[in-house]
Image (cartoon, rainbow, N blue to C red; front, side):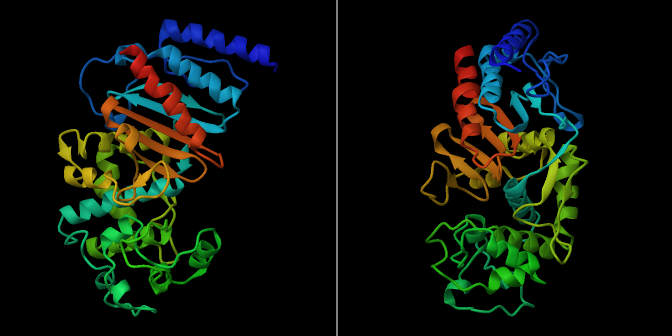
Length: 365
């Protein structure tokens, strides 16, 4: 297909968009834009049984800006598998690349960590854990860990949450391969020697997230995946979650959760509403605030909270996973953006939010 033909097709899509609204579901790059019927916003609701859609302009967003975003995705040949934009609780833009659709489950990779963080907060609220200052080694009294010293004994749940455990954890895949092959992942992680005082250095470590999963399971008396279903997924209407497990059948804390893009948006919307869902406080509001507050500097654009990345520029925060999985929450604008993708770098996706989604609100205002 020629570039001229592509541009003509997208301009045709833009014309439809301006007349009919901004919920697009299409196959890219070979199918023409097809606008689905939209449900006009008619009052408060919760998307437990399914999201409602609305015209972008009814939610004070500029549809032309959103259409320009779709054109950019095609022109830059970004391998975006799904995109969901929610404002004020309504889907105002949506896209799927064939063969993916609304019912497709996506591997979230490290977005899984943010779900584990939520479960830790729920476990604390229910009294299964005393709080984030509880020493990690005391959570495993039946284990005998190697390389135990004063620094390791001082490691707390908060240090795991903020990726400041102090454990010696090299970057790259080889150490994860070693963990994968081990008979007990918790033993493998907490056997590692210490490289720094807990709390002193940020060192991204999915092993920390898995230890958090194990703590939730041990203290709640049920597998993490069961605890997640009962306390988090069921209230939100997330019914098709699949979670990979370790060698002992425990949900992997650092990756492995598979859910739909729309269900990812539900999780972001729960945090946008400070843990409240349809009148029920699913996650304590103070936990949501603590999780999305910077606790560790990373030397990057994003800082780190409790298994959430924070974006000070807009007071925003994000669950971020490998290959471009993203749940981006912007409280100031009541926006949740979800991407699933297959890309080596998620910066082009962040640029789409910066260049089109936020300006779509600003232009409408």
